[in-house]
Image 1: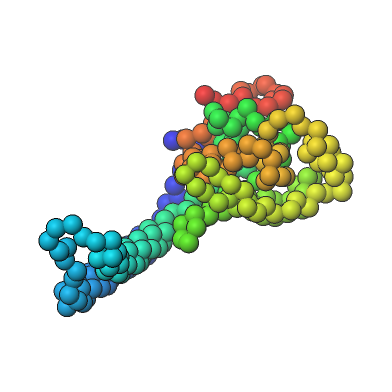
Image 2 (image 1 turned 180 degrees about the vertical axis):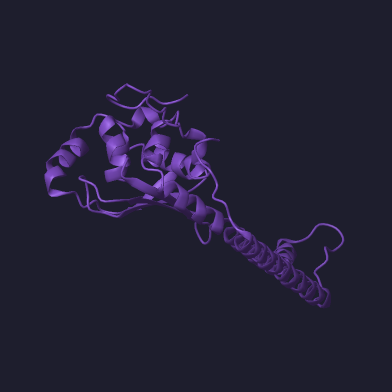
Length: 264
């Protein structure tokens, strides 16, 4: 896509990237070796423990309970082993993703208005973005999403801003507890509104008749805010470029008035 161009790396950066891949590969091998070794050790221990066997004929409630307890005891170390293996694999994948995400974030920060463009062009969220929201979002320089699934599934959304006439926060964090059906807000950074905008912020927050990006931005308890959180975490964060629209350059001898025309 024409909107982004990768920088040219020299031989040194290629060697560094190769070394990084080798180290990550070594980490993967060591993690797998540890898991296999743990599996073999657990299997040997289980072979040494006499297992309860169903007796002939129907079991009494007492014997059935005893057998169930024995099976559950055998199952617990297997469950623990599965959790450990999953956690190790997740950490490995996060290490692999991080340099790419850091590089992507650095490139996006060199493109003013990138996130405002992406959010305003998302088919499900564009109807919720007012002109004032879009201007506010034009000061947004980065978006980060972090997830933790143990012991609970928590999604943390961080929005980074440069100096602007609306608020003083450099980072706004919103956290959501995630379950099968919804994102449920659990924490939101208080907005430190600039003095010249406090009255307008109060008016917009209390007089709005429906969900918009400002409602989600300023009050995480606003009804329907989980919709925006889900879009940011599940869609925009994973691939924002699919919603970016490159600005059409002005023709010679013409003046730009209003919003610049977007390429579809």
